[in-house]
Length: 289
Ligand code: OAD
Image (cartoon, rainbow, N blue to C red):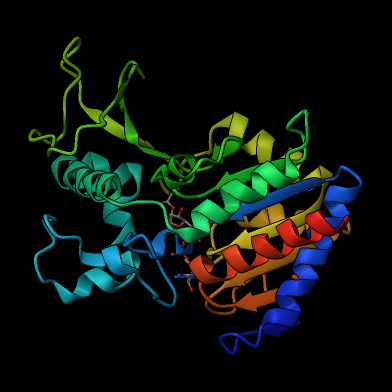
């Protein structure tokens, strides 16, 4: 089932709300997997797919000038092989680290949107006393879920703010909105180059986040996939695995994705509009019980 005529998606959203309420009622686990579409309305570019950016798309004080291409998905105007692989970094560490520092600063300037805040509230409604009723798996590296108040967050693809020594693995956090200035940045103690703790194509995800994803897929009653093209594995596989064992799978996205065929409900539209509506349904439903 899918719906996407703007506001005509209430029935589909209602089915997702009912599934969430049922899950909360018997203490089941709600798993959410978010992608770049969830942050699009905070003005952070996505990687692929349809575009529905937010007011912050070209935030004043930024360094993106008036470049109209800034609204396009990143992989439609940049080569992922050059910017998001170990080989690309080995070839041109200056280019790669400049690009990640540009993204880091852009994300630092951004603020969580209504979609992020809705997911933080959903966690509070679902988590239960022991916190066991909710988990958020995010492919985003921007930290906006945490800034919106989400607690049980697993960053599948790492973080733009943590950088590590290529030789020793020692990490450093860059929280300063000023440009790093030196590319690649260096570890003061060793002089070695630092790289972002972001998972690149061809690299394995950290073991603990894969375990969290597998655990969520094997235990959840409801799996909600939001703002992701579901094109990158293993992240996309968690929703598929949950669906294969009978969990209720729902998707919120601007357009159809690889997951739409297996989702019980696919709701088309913007995360910042649909997620608050969904969460207010859940809040209202809990109030009635
Ligand atoms: P993508 O950029 O692949 O997909 C974003 C999805 O969000 C698309 O399907 C859009 O249609 C949808 N979308 C855009 N704006 C939206 C909005 N306001 N509301 C709802 N949906 C919206 O992002 P991811 O699926 O997160 O990996 O990409 C997965 C990984 O691929 C990323 O983590 C990144 C990338 O290569 C790494 O960098 C390691």
